[in-house]
Length: 253
Image 1: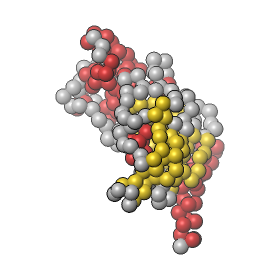
Image 2: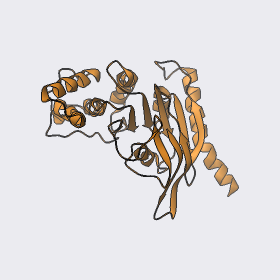
Image 3: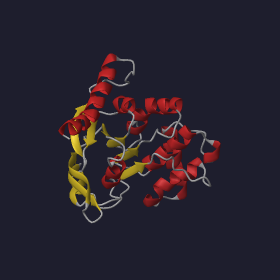
Image 4: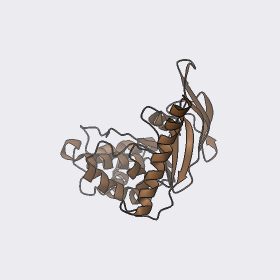
């Protein structure tokens, strides 16, 4: 999906990425992890066509992605809902590009709210909903666009732990459930337990400029249990992959 990426800021004086290659298979959740400030969120924006790399190309089914497209949607870490709109109206925003008759748009928006577990909350305003409910609305709006790929930028980081845990348990079935058009998901997260619970493959970024230092497949059946020894082994493996490059750099210095 992402081939030979390089990105520089300051007219090339500060290189952010170097030769990053990421491939996401159909039905997969790919996670990207790395130290704070490494450029994970920037990488998502390149994948979505919001930023153009200096070199390299993003491809979706072989076609270059050069600008934002409804085929690739982004869910932000800050929960984005419009306070003056109901849950239904927020979700209908994701359908605007389809130019559907209002009745059909409302019907589709209701279906998306039901998919994310919010049937009966169509007329609620964001101030009347919890953080977890608002994030479900944001996910429903993204899914309403009918995307092939969903980009998720630390989508649970602004939720309390219990709410985040409940949503993580449901999110795979929501994203790939009946009625969803999704083929793949790219998740950015700093929570290694979250990554092991959700991802099929993990790309580990490190270095300056950032590059992929490891690719780790998570071979665990779903649903995954945090207390499973195999689960803990993957968490330890990811932690080692994150910290080893830094330790090597110190040793060389």
